[in-house]
Image 1: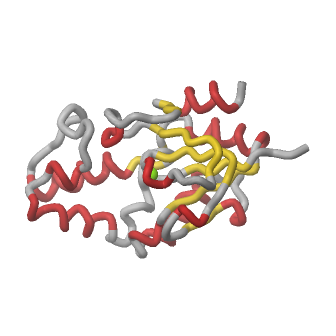
Image 2: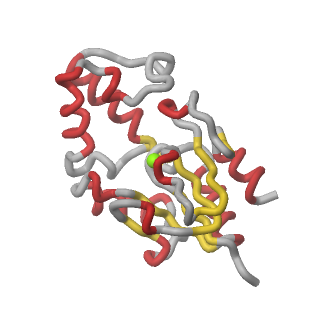
Length: 177
Ligand SMILES: [Mg+2]
């Protein structure tokens, strides 16, 4: 039986780097940004302009991506999706070269049922085509993707979407029912 090819993003879909970015920023600058303050914006737009580079440094720090929290429900739903779909995790990890090893180790820890062939760390996701893509960045949706599902994250809440899910329960309702 043909299984549709399903492409799932890591950051802000499976893993939560935003919590850690805010924690590190609070540690270094004593400022805690609330959920409300970051709605509709990227963190780099909220911090003082001179600090945007600091956020980038955090993301490129070896170990940053190694111990991120798993987004609620991701493990259970991904496990079930893995039975029903040709499932691939696709992360534009080249943006942060130090993240590659951390992200792979993180996936082995939390998603041990994924074979290494199901994991793709890349530059542009426009090289990757599939039937369905779940991603928090609409910039990754392109003509080679059939069904484009925007996963809600703080920065995209006001963005129009062809199809949106707010959490992994909603992914399950759409793709496993
Ligand atoms: Mg993402």
